[in-house]
Image 1 (cartoon, rainbow, N blue to C red):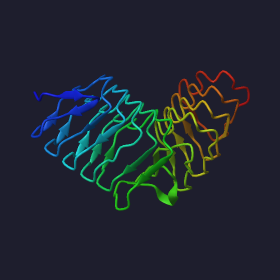
Image 2: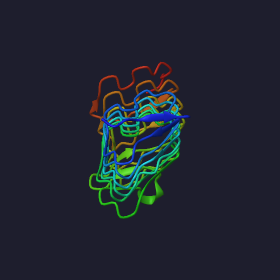
Image 3: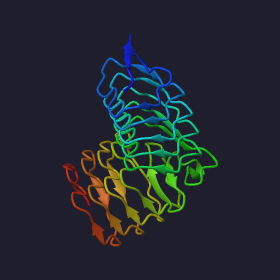
Length: 251
């Protein structure tokens, strides 16, 4: 196992290290920044989990995968550059990075796991680089869309959902507390589980007549929601879809 050090808040990883093991720096409150040497080819799950003081990370071009929960709970991390070598971003990789303001998905990324950027309320800029064959940010929508299925998998308060989107994916706006309004186009048929869960700033929403299904916990804990229009086209509403919406009086 490699020997890691933290000096004055800076994480020191020895040159020649190839793997940063699972949970290596987990919950290191004193860690504020780290530079990972080019010898590292793998960062295992939970490596930086809960490092609440971590504000800066430099990832090398040798990394091909960001594993599950690698940066989960790094609440001070404001931005990160994902190198062009990365092909996979696993589930919950950046979940609860509450200060993360922007993210660019490089053309190399072929897979983004569920909840990879869930509960990142400060996200204001989202884009996918041109040339990506799996994901896109068509029409400058400020979101990530799975190209083949037209599913919007990640949005933010300024997202404009394109009329080509057929589904708002699970966790797409999860924890987006700054979201106050959203227009859902009449191309959308499905709203996935937890899609708007925790959007406490959302006060009203109108679903178009194209919507057939509302998933589990879609509007869970939308505590500011007072009004929602549900069309007759909806055939299925999942469990706990409006759990915690205590102010909802009109639906």
